[in-house]
Image 1: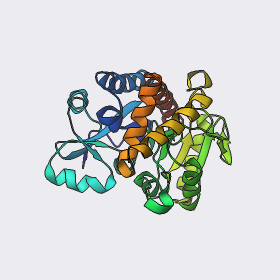
Image 2 (image 1 turned 135 degrees about the horizontal axis):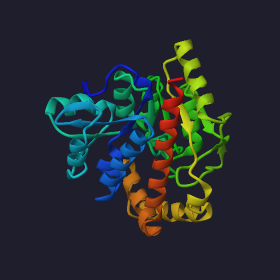
Image 3 (image 1 turned 120 degrees about the vertical axis):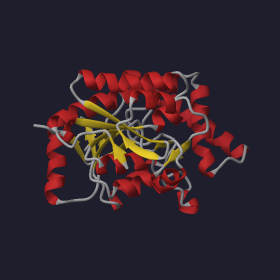
Length: 294
């Protein structure tokens, strides 16, 4: 594993996953968003560390040229933690998921990671055992992950139960309402909230003082004036699940199908929410990275 970050002042760094621009957003918007996120952090005095696999090399701190190249590659591997040794041995490119990004960030000494939405428990997991590796990885990687909750297509209640079982603390930023990615309130609550990034930094430092191994999840809801109307999203999801069942789509194929259905049904408005969510989490991550240097 290589990285381009100095080990001095590593607290004032913020890591990103690469799947946001390799798999999550359409071209050319994907590259624009990736470079905009890096530029906004530099302007705030925080060093961005975009993480991905370039020619088989897990890299913390991709260059602008590398990000540009990865954003234009077709049929790239989506790399979770289990895939890292495979793509490294084969020498291929890869966009890193939350699990792989969190692992690589921690091993490079970067403490804060901003993403859009987390993976979690899928509907029907009691029969399919379909759960994201994000959860078990975050139970073993002591960083802080900022997200707007888990994707609305997931089983939010079951996901929160799994976080509890895995001893992963979930803290709301300014709210105890757990966000639902496209909406500010998933309908579920969390036990704790922090008012600002200085309070969040105290939680992280206390976790480290105790020697606990798990991530802290900071749930940052999308602004209400930028969310999809909750009633509309509920209707879309019901129709999306119905269409998936009618077409016999299940398992790993469900997530891309459902997300594509939402994007098409909202005529691209969900994509705008996705970008707004990411911008907000990047900004909050930069503030938290700064608080951790105090």
